[in-house]
Amino acid sequence: METKPFIFGKATSGDNFTDREKESSRLLSNFNNGINTILISPRRWGKTSLVKKVCKSVQSDKLKVVYIDIFSCRSDREFYDALASATLKQTFSKFEEMIENARIFLSRINPKFTIGPDPMSDFSVSLALNEKSSDVDEILQLPEKIAQRKGLSIVVCIDEFQQIAEFKDSKTFQKRLRSVWQLQKAVSYCLFGSKKHLMNELFEKKSLPFYKFGDVIFLSKISTEDWISYICERFESTGKHISKELAERICMAVENHSSYVQQLAWLLWVHTQKEATEQDFMEAHQDLIDQNRALFEKQTERLSTYQMNFLRALVDGIHNEFTTQEVLQKYQLGSSANVSIVKQALTKKELIETEDKKIYLADPVMRLWLKQEFSY
Image 1: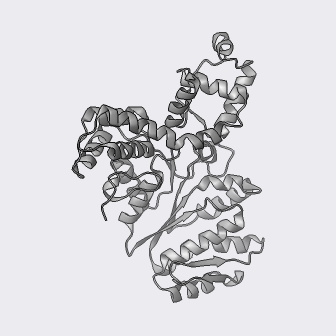
Image 2: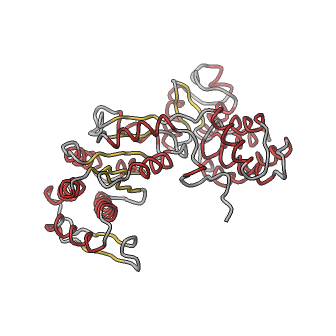
Image 3: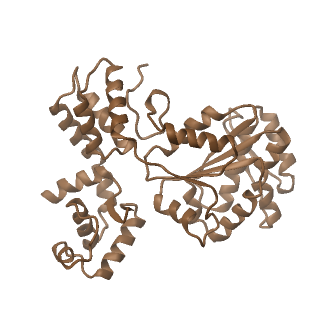
């Protein structure tokens, strides 16, 4: 089967993974040296792809990686089940070893096992948890106990880590995690997630337990130069051609947003017969907007008039000084106090983000769509 030249909407690997050499090296060094890592960036900038790439390269007989996605976890109990299941599944190569060690290390909790047709992949643990701290600590210590017993190091990577902020009595839960994790010698943690503002709060707010928990990496955008080289090479690898100028247009249109660069490049590749043209680009550009239209309509359908007016100001290039009389009147934003309320609401909805004290739309393709909508 022919490999797609561009991948979007899921983690990329192999030839579809581009650049990130500096971040990969730093993450690799942290993993090898037992340094806790916090990876922060807006959604779909390639965090998961980066972590999985480094996880694959660092695995060895002496260093094991446990990878968990906790997006579906809605409580601390579900988190503990997920942690125990992933740790056992990814540190032992035989099913019998998983069961034996679960009973040894979780003996006080009476674990129950769910097993599918393939025990090594269809395996999960359900824990009859008592609220006693000793029971919970036994689960949180599971990676450390396994690492000590097997004489190796373990890196626990937790995707969508911001979910813990939604748990009941979240701060107490966070304190419990940190109090155990910070004392472990053979285990380090890589924590990352798709909601930038929540991740920032968890790790940068001095009053919260995970403040200064580890090395914080703010993932930056891949450079236009690197994207141009990648796009041109991927076109050429399939017998098609794109000019550097059009490859740059792809980057500029979506502000170097990783997932959207891949998606727009893919759409242009589909439209291209042999050599990409301006007309091909324009059709791919509109396809990109149309394919995301339903999502954007859903995200904005319940916004207030003030919130939509604020987005209109952003589309028009206003990024600060929203409380000047000129801006307040032109975009009908109400009072200065109202602007503050609007910004908080849109930030919580992940529709805007702040960078260098300026506010931008979080999604560059939503900006393209809004520009069309506002022009009608």
